[in-house]
Length: 215
Image 1 (tube, rainbow, N blue to C red):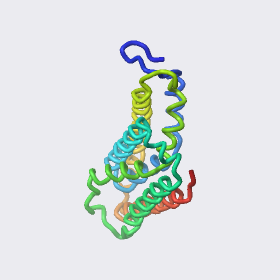
Image 2: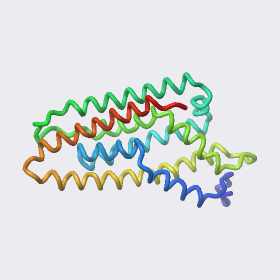
Image 3: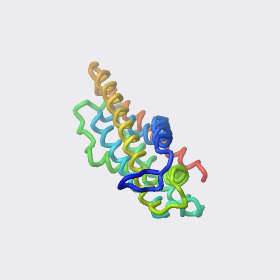
Image 4: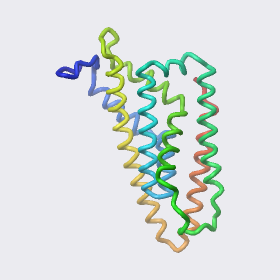
């Protein structure tokens, strides 16, 4: 249990941090969303997508801390509603990217940073599997007999989220660097458009995958 001024019912914190690192390092929809945005629109878009996903995780942490995420675990209807909203949103983003023309030039207006941020936040917030993961994973490191469980939940969620955001930002920078290197070729305009279409196809696939998941 954490001592000092933070007398929270948290146990096995080093184990939690190691497990959180491995989970965040495992490729998933969030990481693919970041890499896709960075590859299609540049590293700045990837970083903003990472921060947006982090904002979505903050929401999941707070909802789980107050017990609202338990509704998704208990109610099949609530799970299905959130799942289909999230799947539809991913497909909608993907279709928009698929509409990029192969002949588009590199001088096309960049995607606004705030739009990418909110896309990442909404994509993460509308994924019920994230809520269920927080509800199942974090309590394993909280002592049920002690008080202050909500604060402990928020602290563990913050640790998990900071690590995940940092990893996603690194992935965004790497994908953006690869994009910039490839963009030096004379066909960079066409390449950029095709990369957006490839990312769009990936988002449509993620939306379909989310729609086919069950509780």
